[in-house]
Length: 418
Image 1 (cartoon, rainbow, N blue to C red):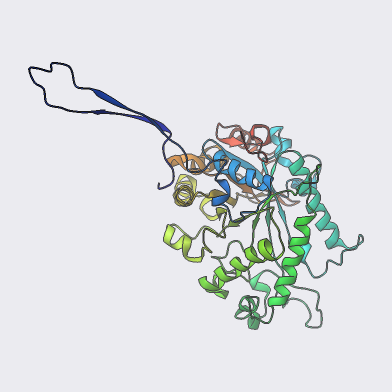
Image 2 (cartoon, rainbow, N blue to C red; image 1 turned 90 degrees about the vertical axis):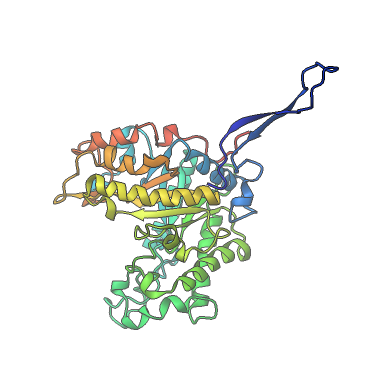
């Protein structure tokens, strides 16, 4: 681990040896070299040097630093749409709070509604209403000291499941794309492509949304942004079948440089988050845009937890160990950016799934993972159990283990320590 230096004090004693003689019976002099303190590579003074945005806001810098330090002892536990989507549409407190008594430590939102072509910015428009709900969720989470992460299910190609005359329905799923778009659409958004201006327009909307996220003192709210996630699969139009590694890198790099340098957005940490297909660092880095474009090394992983017991948990741990080691070497943040096991009327919970299998995947082999996020509960199923569910006690046990952090045990994430 190149950049992780053990905190210790090394004291060296150099004994200067000189020849003894009968005329000089005095003992040889001893020269003591002062103690040398070896510390972590990351400090409050140099934190910006490891970040994508050297002009990041103070709160964004603090979030990077505190997430990196958190991983040494704990991982933040959270859920997508924790304040917006509930099992059986129950509403009220987050389902995590219903079960544990405390809100999550991290909350996920999405920019899909912000950039949807049907969002006309009027109060009566459903897509604009969803945009406002997501912004409110982010603001409320920040006010509680919770971490925010934002995905982007960007609708782009025309949806073949709608009439050809309907110009308003677009998709992010490859299965709904016209075949002609599958081989061309991603390439068309790159610089020089026919849809590049369209893509810049979408990023303009992202920048505008980011600028409206403000705390009680007018400060910009930081969030972790993970564009084009799960790219190693091919269920999204930005997936592996539709772009080369170099094309993916080009698109990701353009997102960062356009938002940061052209639009002046400085409240974002950028996450790189494939699905779980990569088990070696070489493969994981095949689409990696580079250290200057990525703050968070993530991985979405549902497959290894699909009722595969300890075998699946061990596979997941090995992959997390891989990204944890990379994050230590690169001085980045490591995270399980999505995971879960969904329970429905026809799919029963797995005994001790949370407290045994998931927890061991997140803690074995001394890995350093900063956060984990479950997907959103809804009317038909849950990833996080509510109090009456048969696995509620299992989740509560998981959430109160020594390395799990809900908001009640989360340190202050938006202020650099002294």
